[in-house]
Image: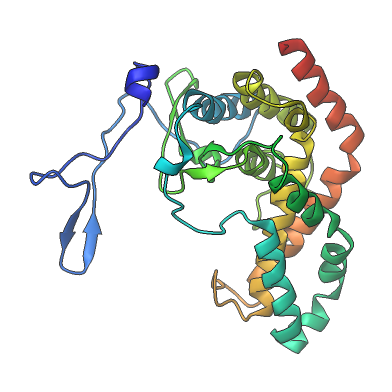
Amino acid sequence: YLHHNHPGTIFPLPILTRDRQEYSRAGDSWFRLVPFVKGTHTVDTCTEPAQAFEAARQFGLFTANLHGLRMDMLRHTIPGFHDLTFRYRQFEEALAQGDADRRKASADGIGFLLRHKHIVERFEKMRHDPSFVQRVTHHDTKISNVLLDEDEKGVCVIDLDTVMPGYFISDLGDMMRTYLSPANEEEKDPNKISIRQENFEAIVEGYALPLAGQFTPDEKASLFYSGEFIIYMQALRFLTDHLNMDRYYGAAYPGHNFVRGMNQVVLLDKYLSQKDVLERIARKILNSGS
């Protein structure tokens, strides 16, 4: 599709084996190769707005350039991956069946998530609203999944395993979750978690402008919600796993998923506290690009 509609797009597909397969088996392991893109590198954390802009622009272009590709040509590699209703149901099951001591010790985080169930309710309405369009979505928009050139300009996105049909809030929201705060999800000190407004502006500008002509009015009004959606979902998932004795993510130390869950609770709380100013920034960017 890209070859015919956007020739010149860098899209590092797996290199075929001699028998024309995209992977090779050796013993009990599976391997594949992808081309090396010369003159590029990745970064693990977003340290400045320019990086946020370049990464967001690449993810925005990725989805914008694949506009028109039939969704039935894509496979759901992880069914229910960003289904917030499903994740909330898992959370409720953990509340009912999870470890009682951990549930008691997690009361503050649990209470916060229960009070913000409206985020789930909005998602449920959105998924049944034709104003919200399913698009080709990357679903893992951490900054290390973008190749940058020697001038720190974005070249292309990588790590395509999770590319599947989805809503833009998945990709934009995950950038909010991982680019806004200087502290990542492993940070134990809540005082180090903050919202960098300049990074929010860079993310929205980089991602939304390539897609502005494709967005519906309701989608344009939901840019801020994308951050609510993903941060809330990740808080749910970490605390759910903590209550379930770390059987999904595992734990590097006792209480690891509790720390990560509460980290996301703090991040969401600080994000919501700046809703008015961040929504004004988003509207300004969209209006300037219209």
